[in-house]
Image 1 (cartoon, rainbow, N blue to C red):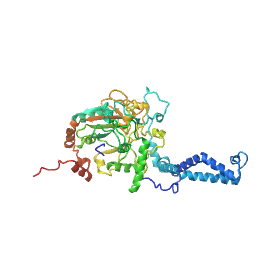
Image 2 (tube, rainbow, N blue to C red):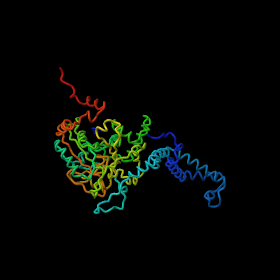
Image 3 (tube, rainbow, N blue to C red):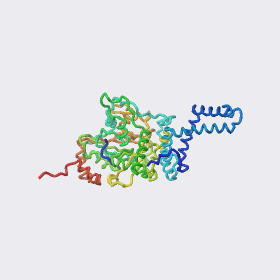
Length: 480
């Protein structure tokens, strides 16, 4: 788990030779689409017409309008169609279409493992009744999706200002423990995972999202007059394309036999980019990450409590965390490669109504020590209705760019002292605690002295020891 916040198949062949029949279906579909477009293009119609003329036949005969086509006409048409299909299949655009169809189709459209099919079906979102006072809209959620493109709103100063209207300030260890206990006691119908960040101004972003923001030259706060007037933040297509590229690279490192989730988790632990968001099921461990000694000691920290599901009408229906099954976790390809916005809505992927939690096996000693888990979620599908939930301290609505600069997963900010009510959007709430910089040392000391949290406990490996010796000097004695 990070303490700070700053196997693809062999694709050298363009055909579906050697694939199992059901896995070749996405390739067949892509080829059929390419051939259909080629046949209907003006160039191909012209080629057919010329072929017919060379056989001294009229276009009407070929169309079956004046009689039955002769064998010579049939051969001419077949030759023209074959040439057109060959040219289309060998074109760069269609080759890329086939490559993506193979990966996405094999991964999602036609899984051969019955267990994978069953797990995928169970991963779809359950039906949740909306409050009676909120009328249903005839539009589907994906029809009202708002892209995270534009400029920051005048009141936006950075991710810290986004959460400021909903945060509870913590000034001591006693306030921390009392506030965490009060939240858990008052929200018994919710299940939480926790995340600590050393700087309260950092956004709630995955490392892959941050990597894409850096690559695209995006900023998360208004800067100097040289700041671009319009920014376009990463969307789900950008994230998925980057993940598929990582799986391609895994082949070069001979890791193509590792499941997608495990590969991304291992990269995450080594500081590499992934969609996974580090969380823990222990709030005190998350608080330790927030106050851990480091370069951000002079900055306020932040502790997040993320509910794993939305607030429901009936408190008799607890929101159990949707833990990712072993079957889905073992998939070699991203099972979240949904082909359309409709599929994303059906699976509650990026809608904020369902947080998928993966509890990985203890292949790394840190996982068990940190009671670690990963939050897996799609890029938020922002809509006009959900945007009305994101208000700044002055009561004005944030912009889509403000939201994207603040978080890469859907979160409905709620003050820890407020009681969230069920809403039609079914967004799972998130509660935020700002830990004052002046309280960090006391909280860190109490966690270490009273509860035994230390670098050796949280990072029980040679890398953890190396980092501790490198970043701190309190282990060096006085000179004699």
